[in-house]
Length: 89
Image (tube, rainbow, N blue to C red; front, side, top):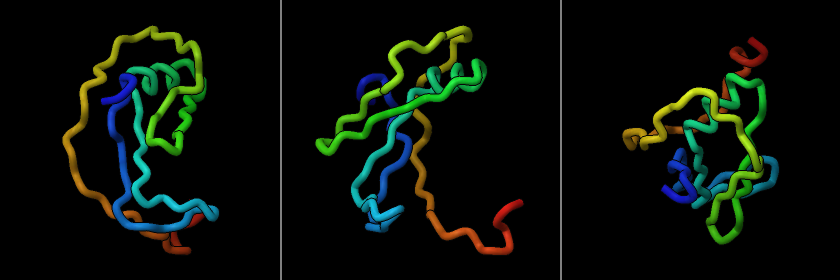
């Protein structure tokens, strides 16, 4: 955990999303912040810097409900293109 952020997902293999290569990119999240912005109808923004550091862009998030920020169990997932038959559902 870095800056109270849990490691959410990282990409081992290289692939492009909107001309941005995601190989080795790590995405993090603070679950308590995420939970509370959903309740408050706000948005949560992070800046993923080239040196691997992750910082929250939002300066103040109202924490109305305490929520566990403990890490999730590590698991492997696969990312695949959505079949056209499932788009726009």
